[in-house]
Image 1: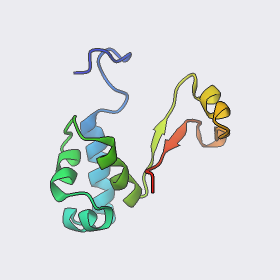
Image 2: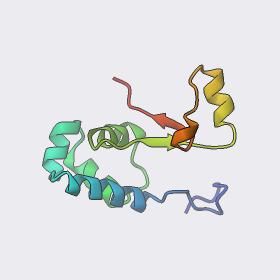
Image 3: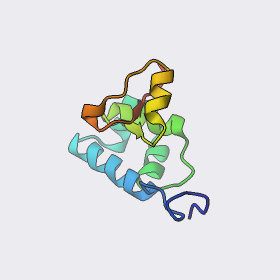
Image 4: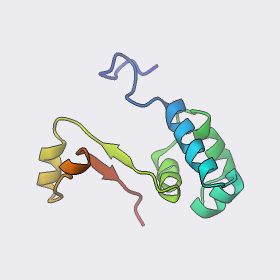
Length: 105
């Protein structure tokens, strides 16, 4: 599926797992796709695509959905401590490390 990934062609989180998590949180929030669309500014079709594991969804589509559902995307890896220190953002070791990715206002 992703032949150049270091996980043997598999991402740490597959697109369908991400979609399942997004749908779960949307449903637990008792939101329809239409309501999530109105709150996030992302089309119902794009929400459907994410929830059904479409692999070519853009990050600029995903981030507002995650933000609306109070979810975050976390980057983690062996160089993240160095990266966050270089940028002047201390890494939150108590929360499991990594760097959260937030949409730009």
